[in-house]
Length: 420
Ligand SMILES: NC(=O)C1=CN([C@@H]2O[C@H](COP(=O)(O)OP(=O)(O)OC[C@H]3O[C@@H](n4cnc5c(N)ncnc54)[C@H](O)[C@@H]3O)[C@@H](O)[C@H]2O)C=CC1
Ligand SMILES: O=C(O)CCC(=O)C(=O)O
Image 1 (tube, rainbow, N blue to C red):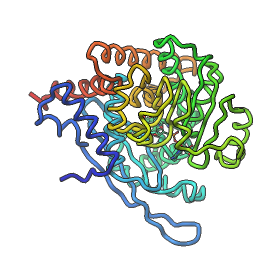
Image 2 (cartoon, rainbow, N blue to C red):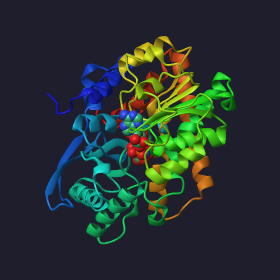
Image 3 (cartoon, helix red, strand yellow):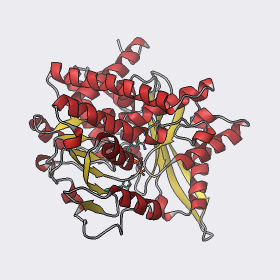
Image 4 (cartoon, rainbow, N blue to C red):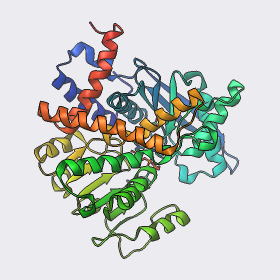
């Protein structure tokens, strides 16, 4: 029996078991590697603006503490469940290990819908959530960061709440903070910047020029928008489709990014941009393009559409966008679709979070150029390792990335005496 249920947890379990089969990990070691060390569930009661008291459910799942503190984002989303949070924490572990960071994985969040909360309500949820988590987090045990539905401001409230409890500023309790509070240059852009950098690496490998490429991006929040603008402005990629939860737009001759940027600044969502370019969001993923970057939610590429993707590179900015059933189909299409798996593709975010934590601990800050150089160095190392492993073991890019991550965690547990 386990409390971790639901389709997203099942995905994480299935991916892990495939990797464990490949690595020939004995059955009796598997549960210890897969199941989280602990899961904390809290009630987050707040006074709503209309005078009611509403109680939201909050979670934090810490997967393993074998290699250092746990690390991972905080998600505010309406239907959040502990199984989904656990899956995201497990993926963080493999991601951190693959990137060579001294962390285990964690993830957390609150089941709430941020667009339906006023700013005061959002602040109350953020502060009460952190307040409830104080006994379970510290800069040496678990360090939070932004994820879907949270941002620099939420991190600032987390940091302030924790610091007030400690009686002094503890900047290193969260990453992804505003620079003015000890955040690092480049964290806000890091995930999308990393996605674009790895797309550049994939283009070199496939011997295609980014400036001849077109791209479709799903999700237009932190990761999706930075990926879009970086691909377009630094790599010369033509963006032909984008979407968010309110609208999807497509134009094969290229989207007007300046106008979209101005619209987003004003309205915060794509809805209302123009009805002439509107497209069914499911169809958007099936449009011909060189680069398809899902940067929103889990399980958008499944057995119903994996065989019909018309991209050359699938760059997984989101966590868990592709189901194991879709992976099986994509494995048959490896010569047509090059997959940059999530735990590699979106690792730029946690890599720069690590840099932020290190800078906070040493009270010495780096320039954005320094941050980016170090980011690209770690991404390049991980990319080269995954491509090499996939080639020499005849496995998919996902299995290769997972195998490297899982092996690293297992080696740490073995050295510490957990496995024979
Ligand atoms: N923020 C970060 O640094 C990192 C985020 N990620 C992952 O990237 C993904 C996106 O995260 P953020 O950009 O931070 O979130 P965000 O909250 O800034 O943006 C999410 C975007 O996805 C859109 N969206 C939601 N449901 C959608 C749907 N069904 N179809 C199309 N669009 C939809 C929203 O409208 C919004 O544009 C998530 O999977 C997250 O876990 C991964 C690594 C780091
Ligand atoms: O920056 C971090 O610590 C974590 C980012 C994150 O949540 C993710 O990579 O999925």
